[in-house]
Length: 168
View 1 (cartoon, rainbow, N blue to C red):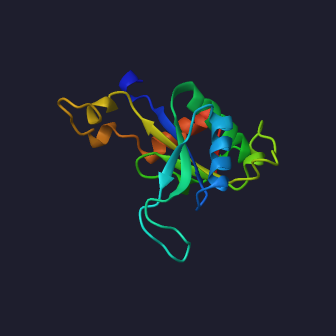
View 2: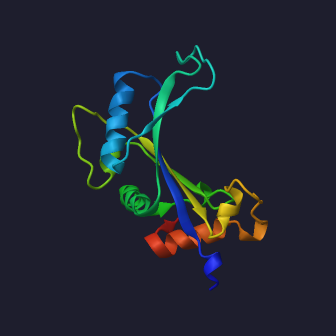
């Protein structure tokens, strides 16, 4: 196989949407930091929604982006927590996959801490092939051709081979 066509993990993003700031968001940040080993970033609301009691630019969630070995380690833990099964509908047309878990204590190695509580979280995996830097660099930026983008089928095959995931 051509080494430029090998699919690899570009990044893994863990997200906990709390819906409010304050103590609950601080506990969610502590959980993400404990799980990933990195300091999470707060995300802010884009619009005001009086039904949910949210104002514009109010912190409502936190996320952490992982790359390299940390990303693979967290992804393996997360997949074990959901039983190494994914639906084909969880993959988008560009090969990215997103999944969620209702309680973080389902993930192996995570224990219940009464000071933190129980949180659900979402995980998104972004795949790429070597050569995608042309889309991110500053000088002579180019678009990635359609044939070099990761397709849904390639991402599914990668997950089956590397992580022994069953597609339901």
